[in-house]
Image (cartoon, rainbow, N blue to C red):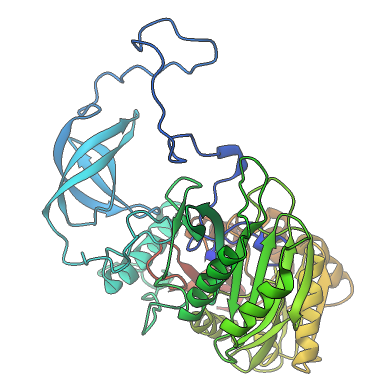
Length: 536
């Protein structure tokens, strides 16, 4: 699973190196280098050069596309539309004489007046000018920088509305992409229809994140740090983030204040100069321990001892202060070198009864409360009695594997990232669990080798990144034919695609439960239970 982040949980591979490669969606949103922001996105004004767009253009300047003829709306036209749904990015979906318009900030059930911003053949984008009729799910977003920040997308929607929409998002993907039979009211064929349960939400859907990854910049008066503005690398300075644990906010604020006092420079991604790139804070909810990681553009830190001393004095509950060195001109957060500046190299936390050691670059779920809910549902769907052999594909640092090992006879975990397997083995030793074995490699290569060695799985659990399962892994599952498959997903579209493959190969999807790991964002996790049809 993510980050986050799985933050959304963009769910790049959950591991020491790769899972930390990019900020997650509910923290600093980072475009890839191939889509660097335009000067206008970076806050610089771009003025036209030349009197007319129809004049002769300099070489290399892109020609503005001609208006598309025959559309019911045109650019800059104002119109009133009804919002009939919301897409996976959290944009309202409306129709203008049958033509689809996506409207940021609009909610299903609303009537809004909009200005058309951009048109394509099949759809366009519009800006909301006025809410003519508001949805009963519309609320005032409590975050003061919500309209600027790219971290949350649906704070303007009631939490009950968010949970209902996320369930419907899963249902729509199963039906549209997977062509799967989902149980609906008044349906005639319900015997083999998939039950999609209500989204499992939080009692308190704020301050749930245990990790902050904050980009640092410079402004008059010192350092700033917060989140990137939507679609840009312009940093919105932040004092408080309502989905972060309060202690994370405090640590980031103190680091900025103390760094400014000592004249620490901020990294400039355009010039490649400056020292401090990111501040990463990890908070263990159960033990209260905290880790601070300073990501720097070089090893040498001016006034290092004084800076560390001031941080320790201002934030006495920090148990570990580390430095990660990243000299590359990239939007990847972490570099290859990490060293301890003060304290331990890990902090400790629990998910349920399982203890985990958290290092600066190891992946750990950012919402520990909902992680326990998610893993509990995974164990339930695995149907374990204590006699089963379980394979955990994409095991990461062993979080799900160790949960399963409490209820199974033997668990085998496989992960392609060596550092993650090292963490997984350490966590197994930490919990004195001897009925779990971890191996480095691609699941689609390792699992067939295990089968040749006589290892037959009763249950296979998969928890892939956003791109879903490798096709060869799905083929491997169909060849092994375990009684049950439990699919943990952070992307409803790839979940639906892969379930279709497994169903065509002889499995039946019995039930899917959405889990809200990231309230106020568009991300939703799901757990699906599949049974081999021969077991029905």
